[in-house]
Image 1 (cartoon, one colour):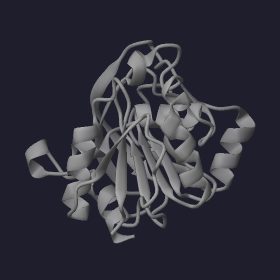
Image 2 (cartoon, rainbow, N blue to C red):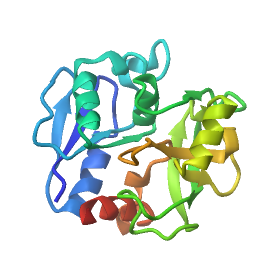
Image 3 (cartoon, rainbow, N blue to C red):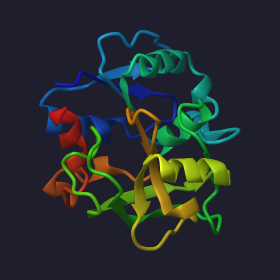
Length: 220
């Protein structure tokens, strides 16, 4: 079983949702890690949840990326540890340089809170083994800065090296380049995505479309 830690920054508000998802699939409670901690030893998976870290001042995720714990996250990633960043977590990962590109203001400049459909680009990673390639599943999104952007060379590299994790399968509401909803690091051990799979892991939540992501991690 993966030993899991969930980072907690001021303004983050999805840590409990993420903890529920982890417990459902892993059968054990994760460790909540305050952003000033610097010891991630003993953890296999670090999760950076959604919310509004530091009130989204400067840029979304910019201040959180400078928190002490992120030095430990970089060390964790460098030694081959797994990292999952969702919504604000994805923004933090790009600001920290752990994933390429940036999350810009949504097309239309409006905050979007709605369900969306995601297409699984590959099912041979530790995050997606319980999905099928090409499978489309539902995930809620709630963000004002989810418009993924990168230079053409980076986008071509993501495509060519199989680093696109998920795409928006229906309407690309936030205007993300090439409908990209989530990407991997080069070694496929870091995943960032904007929608919230942790919000659909139990029938009482309205569905279980997001649970295979956490079941995939549990199976690893």
